Length: 131
Image (tube, rainbow, N blue to C red):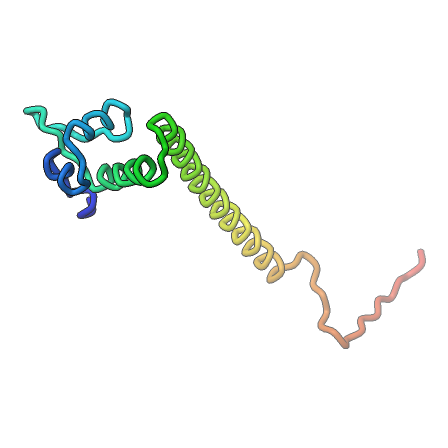
């Protein structure tokens, strides 16, 4: 587990960090923009990823004037694009592995051809007998 994954903040700390009222953070949670973990006592614990996601929500709403419905659409599309990017990177890596395996297989075949090819410059005469 990385330090980023270990970092957790209580709602009051996150509210202060982001300049928001705790009630706004609760609203963003109800809207599904973040899902903080909770202690057994029900205290919300926000991860560093939650805080980063909230920063994105704030940028979209405050700086760009996007309403909450628009934020939901943007975040959903962003997640889909990130997933597609990951899938494409995986597929490209898989193709590279297959290509390298095929290349290695062909190189191995070239080392041990079924028919011996004489070196260049040598002429081999074959005498054919007529039956």
